Length: 474
Image (cartoon, rainbow, N blue to C red; front, top):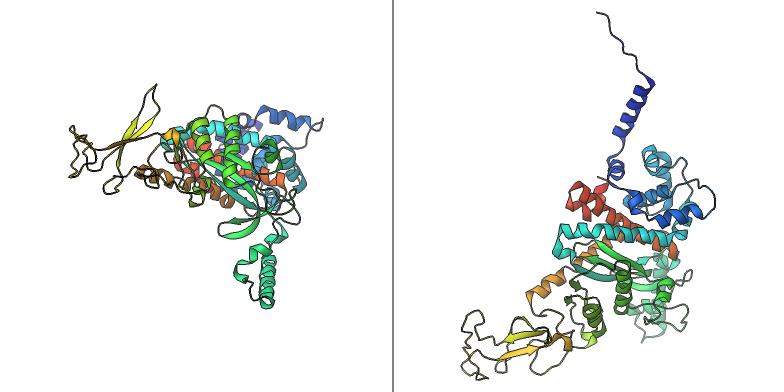
């Protein structure tokens, strides 16, 4: 039987090649191409400034730079050379980014430094886009915010293990000549408070060890999804001159650091300015943020209904007659904590908390007190009202002795997971740079990748993907 031949047109050949290229495209690039709209993510002002800066046509597109830097964080490339080598040898990656020719490392660095503020606007745009997605995933956890500070280690000589061993040897040598000198705790005292190559890099204690790092603040919701990022650089300090600075050395120009507790207010002011329509009901943080000013700011200005912060003994524990350290009234007979039964108050009366005797029966209609030696003539037993507005630290919207307080505080681990994702999973911690603008841009790029995962999780109907950037590669 004679074989039948079919003549193929040029159009058929083109369609066949295009289909083959689309089939061979890696799954990650296909997902990013299919589900991300960069025109929606990148603000128009970024496009305008990028193409207007030179006054002539650019060799590389804006989206090409953004895509390449996003892939750098996804693939955990801590050095630009790793990204550039992959681009040179991977046609698929180069095609996804839109590079006809691979740029050099200087262009990537210059892009981060020149357009750092615009990279921040991309991050803030993604925060706006992901807020309703977070609410749909879990309304209660999305309504909770938690805040913490961290340090981003810099590539300076002081972080070299040889430098640290030299300081140990120096302390041992001093201890031989001075018997009163204790070498075990003298290491930090002998170390410089700032890095010699960059005064913005300061000595900090992070994750159980001393290192030289740049301080940053992170706000995340109860889902562990970042909501706001800030590097405490000179630009941040100039925009908030009211923030007190902790000085550690004689040189006030070189040594300026913002404390954890004092960083909370300016960070939330910037967060509210960037997202004025956002509102949240619950806030939690560790005891480092326990101060009277923070409670007043969070509950009166930010309108949080509940603020869950454990008391810090260094701030001072309240000493009130007839109350325990958590502000719970005590029975005058046996000093047992009274029972909290709810809030009360109206339009003409300040909000108040009602506490009853532990021997009464608030669950029954009679509410009769069973005390053999009652301290009051009232049949229902002793009743005490406390007014939160008089002491927001003792009464931050709920009882400090309640199980609810403990459960909410346990959600504070979400910001720790978010910081771990930014630093370790997305490669911020091991970068070989100490430049402030580059560090700031890399921090926002890591936040951008975290939020892109939320967008993809919503498109793919897979909520687990929102907190697992590594699953993008799998």
